[in-house]
Length: 102
Image (tube, rainbow, N blue to C red; front, side, top):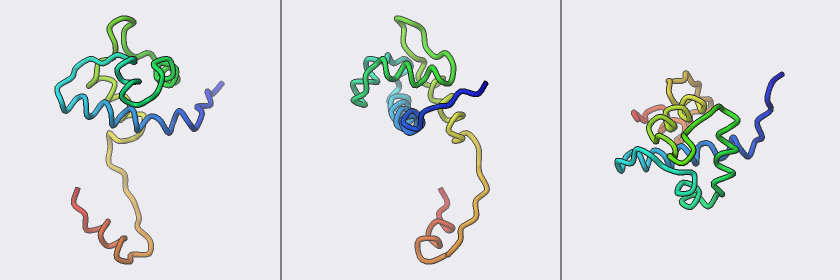
């Protein structure tokens, strides 16, 4: 039995990852669903439900380990590895993408 993950949940994952990356960069190591929800205008219950599709994260009453959850979200989103791509129609925008080193 495969679990169908709603598209809205998938669309929120990069938003969570960006917020966690910002927290991580500022030195935060733990964040609650309450604090994360307030920053993103999402209810804490929605954050917990969204993350539950992918496993168990955090400890009740303690919150989420910021670097750990960020790493898992990057893995889920495929941001933890390099992808081979092909650029078709190399106009100015395509050429800029090809030449971009970052």
